[in-house]
Image (cartoon, rainbow, N blue to C red; front, side, top):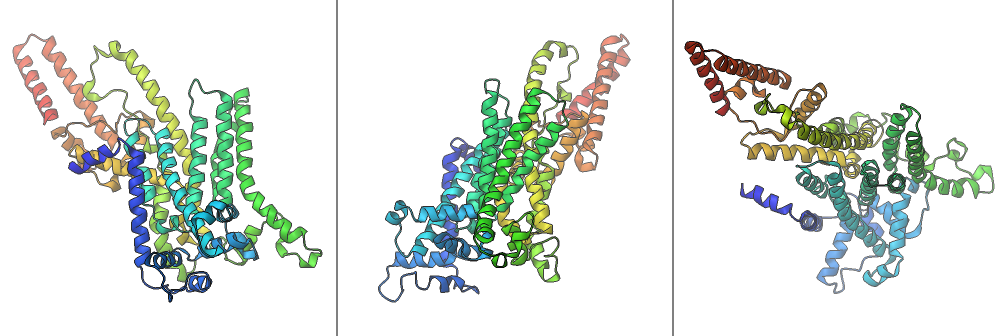
Length: 540
């Protein structure tokens, strides 16, 4: 229990605690990287940096040796492409598969006066550490943005706990060292979370917020999604949030407010598409317009639409529908399977992360007093319903890009990269955080509920809310004989459980009327004893 108290104290200043967790986790990862043996099977990094790193033969300090070793460890695989492109620009056609926005930002930082005053070494080394710096700063900021995003979506009372857990999980992301290396994942997470935050603010209906402000929030969200798309092409999937809204708006009667939302949402969607189109246009100008003859143009220049990204992914990386489904890649699908399961299951269950309290609890049912407190209950219920509706509205839409990403990763992508590209999507972090929060609440209340069953129970609660069966996440009913008889551990559904509870309540009310309405003392005595027995079973 002392651990839970320390955890609760950390919620008093969540951003400071998140910063401390971030620093400790990054130090651990970098220490593991430094201590890992050898250059590995891929010697491209050593060959590339052979002339850039200080030779270790002539009195190099320990600090310089550690920095050189860490540089080699962080510059692997795609990071080599990112660093070289940022250093000298796009030279080869296949390099256009790597995010134009990220490489341009790294190049800008590396060539700035600040970089040259704080970093020393060959231009490539400065570029590498500019990318590492951007990755760390972006990751930290994305943690804070994610915490604020979840705080804006979720209602009380679990807002603080769940938002903190969600942000902590982003620190401990399976992307791991990719969020520290010169990769685009950290910057993509920051921009994508910011875009979602602005979208949520555009949906949030505060009476004092002008309509123009909400429209501006939505357009800014689209611009941020567009910037995220320049970093990673899967940022284009965030446009499905606006596509979802457009479909809903087109099904509504034509009104001025709906027309205005339609125009604003369309502009935001165009901003997302621009993040993909602009780099393609730059490449088209380079390869299709500047060559003097048609013969010197690349084949994709004659395609419609002309996309160097689609051509490179097909020609050089062999991406396409089911192309990765080969026996030799089966281990990679097994490696990605846990993340694919988490992405799909949490996306489908996203609305159930917010559970509505029941209109009335069966233990508090008092027919004679219902009219006196009805007005207060109605006011509170309306406010709670509005908050929960807003949260579900947002979660449904934020889950769509994540679901599409999982499906495309399974059918079209090199499936193993899903473990790192999933780092920029908040719903699966939130889903795990909600399950952990449920497990904590169950532990504190003395009812051990496995994390695995938490999501299933919440999905059941969501269905029950729609059909009017009362259930509550925060209610802690006394566990006694009645609960053991009608509890979930006996295999009964929640709807059947509450049906039996209602029957017991009806019997109690009937016995009360018998006890109070008859003068026959034997009948009164029997009713009194049965009434007390039912009360006793609830008090166990």
